[in-house]
Image (cartoon, rainbow, N blue to C red; front, side):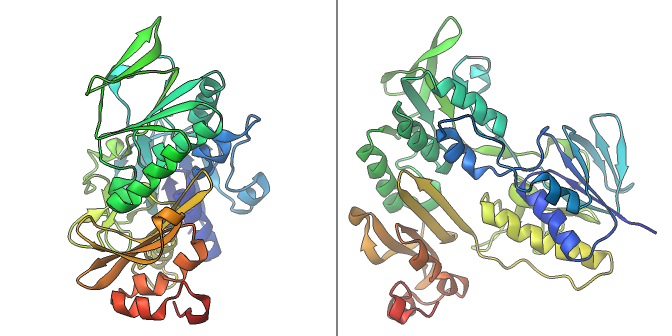
Length: 410
């Protein structure tokens, strides 16, 4: 008798799960459901190459039509899941239909946070989807000045790309430095200086009091300290929320995401979660954490696919053990992070310096390396993977000096 695996969410994590299932020998019915009308596509280029492209870009598809066809998917785009009954093993869809499943994978991702009071104001954008990117590009084509609200990874990338398009840019954030939550003050100060060196005006430790409009279009951003910024375009990049509203009456454990164990399993039998929506056990302490990184989506998808196959009687289950990795490209600088930095970590400069534009910085807890952040040294940083994975003493990492090729051991 044929089995049915349903994956709700047709982004990177959902597609990777489908691919891993087929690669692992799953030959049953495989349904992939996506809210957007587009086939699965890649999101990181939206804030960089696609936003900055001279010509209108094509969809950054993760797989062409031939390779999608090889997966033999029941691909349903433009369809949204509206409810889940774990006891009956059924998913309700907004087209009025229901799907029965043997195994269900939740990969619904995130939705961009926005300010309701700014809804409908022309010239105010978020950037989460390909369609968002096209709309932002159209506004940016005629904008002399742009204001980006939020200096996290996405906001900082958008600011850099809009500056590269020739717009004057102001970047606003309530925190003391860009990327503050990701990598702390030292790295944040480096990113702040990078933006200033390219002519971006930063307003750190500041919030937006209101937007002033003229005939329904944004014309000015007013900050809480009284600063007024004349602008043609506003991009709101203040984070994103997990898409879990449709699960609220399902009984699946939710806590700022879909809570999963170290196998990717939810509290409901035969239901799993992957990607940005999954709240995984925090490798740095108690509780859970959502790791909103491109590589993390694929890593957890691989684990969950293995465990779905095991649940269906093929192979052995396994726990998730990949260390987090993220990167951001801004101007001509690549910033990378291996592991999960914490605000309380000691910072140890391993090599280089922020002033030179190339450095490696270790985040150390009780003498042991928990993360390494680097700029301008991509290969050297990746050679620190073993030190982060095995939480080496920082003295051992300094001695091994894997950033020096002749000593590389990591």
